[in-house]
Length: 103
Image 1 (cartoon, rainbow, N blue to C red):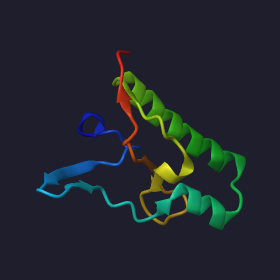
Image 2: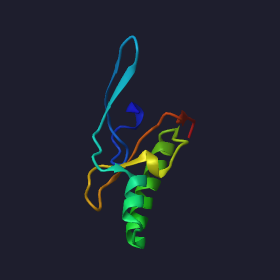
Image 3: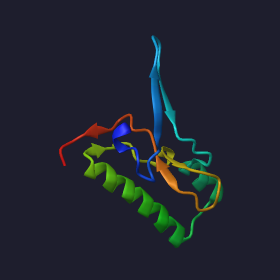
Image 4: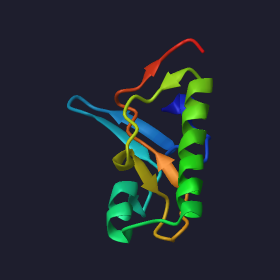
């Protein structure tokens, strides 16, 4: 995650702390919740709004691939909304299945 920090559509990793029992990741607060939940509650999006979301998702994929990372679990549940506003930026999260590759 530190490898990808800095892109506007990827959740920022603020820190990582480990003790005898667990590893704790401190991540950017995304108060808008999951994209999946927003889609369900909203019901539908205009073509323009859907295109903007797709643009942000493709920007994440492009950035990850250019840095040699494959996410491998892209789905609406793994995109968070930064805030509760209608046109909140998307933030990709959950890189637990990701792998590195040589671009």
